[in-house]
Length: 249
Image (cartoon, rainbow, N blue to C red; front, side):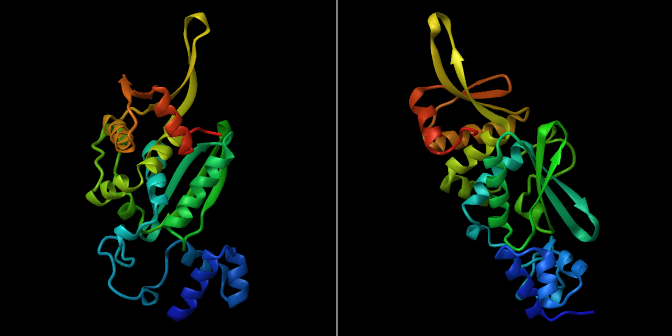
């Protein structure tokens, strides 16, 4: 059965306002499975107006109009995110986070909602006290083109020009996302009771560490590197990262 584009749009608008798939299906008199497909990005082509992306089939992407929250989501994905293929050309973005930091879990879910407001965001508790935040969409490989076969640290990771433009606009959000996924703030100690806060970002990928360091430079933060870890140690720089919400808590 082919549904009119106006009905599909109404369902997506209701989801963007916070209603559940069950509520939308009951309100519009639709099968719950149909609504579930629409919210996962499997909308009928007739429901899409204008030209479509040749890669994913969705509306042509306006990368320059992505919300600032994309910078944070990009950092999370590069740190602890992955994309997996599912039937009918749909992909699932998953970001694994520590359940000890519920505010970061909330920030991750909100960033996904802002980037893909028409798609549902799920949360699932895993073993070892992890929370998996996820969302289905055909567009994830377009929005996160670093997706590819194999582990990220075993292949080349380079930002697209449009991603670099956004990173220059919101370097603090990119740094925050990277630290919230693969970094930490800790207190460095020395002899005679010396103590000083410090940030560390650890990632096996030289390219991803380079993205972190470049974002720090754009933010005016100095860093040093030892092995697979980049450190931010100077007092003024640590305080600047603090003001941008980079500490986990």
